[in-house]
Amino acid sequence: MKSNKRIQNLVLIALFAALTLMGTMIKIPLPTGAFLHFGNAVVLLAVLLIGYWQGALAGGIGFFIFDILNGFAAEAPYFLVESFIVGAAAYLAFSFFKRKPTRIRQIIIIGICAGIAKFIMSVIKATVMSMIAGAQLKPAFFAALATMPATVINIFSTILIVSLVYFPLRHAMQIIFHNQPA
Image (cartoon, rainbow, N blue to C red; front, top):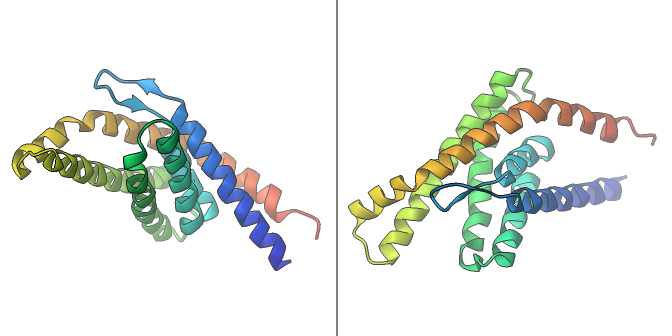
């Protein structure tokens, strides 16, 4: 029985990694040169549905593969780490609701917590990248803030998507994984 649970966990990690990759590949270009994608929503769903470590790992793997395949190899390790940090913020908020949210507003709060972590991580990353390119801290920070509209759009789309699909997916997973014949 324990072996079945391990296999189930591996399959769910692989599934959510693949979904993160595919969600990130569905790109809607924004005027800033960045793009709207659904990878962040998949990662947040993974953390909420299969657990922090498994969900963050799945998201990190999905983002890592996307970056490698799309010419962003230098950023791949960052997004692996970011998945765990943003996932931790989401899971902390999720734990506040005893890991059993019952209302959409609770999912929105969890999404906002994840979004704040994502925003902070994105500002830090953009600031550091500008400083590596030779900018001083203050101009690098303000330049980073100027690139955040795309991040904010992605955060809001993530909150909306997760708010709409979390409860139906949770219900489906409960039926699939808890009502199996032994």
